[in-house]
Length: 372
Image (cartoon, rainbow, N blue to C red):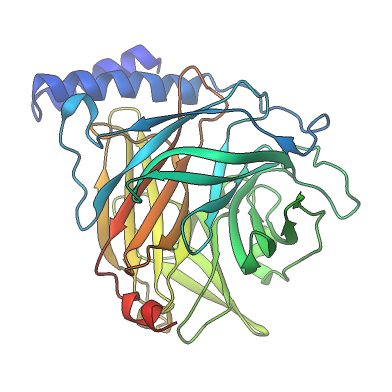
C-alpha cells in the first residue's frame, strides 16, 4: 500500500470520528510516517565515525496536540518537547534512552550502532528548551572496532547499571543478534564492549524482530539490581508479551498482558521496583499509536501475566512519532519526569527525531525516592 492510499484509508476512518482540524493534522502526520516506513534509507555505516561533538538544532514543541488540538495526557502532565535536527550523517535511529536521576544528562543509542550523549536545558526549571554538550560516537566490539554487520549493531535499549555519566556502567540491549552487553561510560564516551549477560536457553532462539527491544535495571523492590528485558514482538503460548528477569544466578520469564496488539518499545524502572513500559502500534489504516503502562513492583513477583495501569495513550492527533526510548528522572520535589525519544529510521525528511517529557506527580515510588 502506498503512503497516499494509506492516508486516504485513514482519512475515511477518522472522518466519522473527529473534526476537520483533527483530520488534517492526523492525515498529514500519517502520510509522513507511513512514507517513512515504506521508504526508509539504508542505515549509515559507523566505520568513519569518531567520538566528538555533535552540532544540532533544538526546536521547542510547545503543545502536545497537533494543530492546536488538545493532546490527551491521561494521568500525566505535559511538560514540553524538542524537535532535534542535525546534518551529521550518523544522527538518527535513536532507539533507547537512559537519564541521570536529576533529569539533566542523558545517553541514547541508535539501531545503526552509535551513541549520543548530552544535557537538556530547561526554561523555568521544567520545560525543555534545548540541548548542550552533545557528543556522538560508535558502539565498539570487545576489540575496540566499530560494529559492521547490520544484525550486530541493532542497539535498541540502554540502562545505567551504576554510577553517573561521569563514570558509569552501562548495559545495552541488541535486537537482531540478540544480546545484552556491558560497557563503561566516562567523559570520553562509551568504552569497547566489556562482556555480556548470560542468556536463558530460550533467548538463544531469538531472531530478527523478536530480539531484545526493551531493557532496564530494577532500582528497588524484591529484585533490586536485577536486569529485566522484553522482546518487541516475542510472545508466549498465551500471546502474552514475553521477557526475562536476571536475578542473581536465576533467569526467570516475565509476561505482560497483550492489550490491543501493541509492541513493546522500552522499559524504565522506578525506585520501588515498579516499571513503566513504552508500547507502540502501527497500522496502515490507523497510523501510529503509543502507550505508557505502569506495572507495580508487587506484580513482578507473581508468575501471572502483568496487566498494569495505562498512564498515557496517544495517536497522530498528538505530537508523537516512532517513540522507542524511555528514561525517567526526578525533580527536587519528587515529581517523576518521563522522557521519550523517537527513532526516525534515518528518514529525516519524512520522520522526526523528537524528545517528549511528561510529569507524573503521584507515582507509587515517590515516597521511597524522597527517603533516599
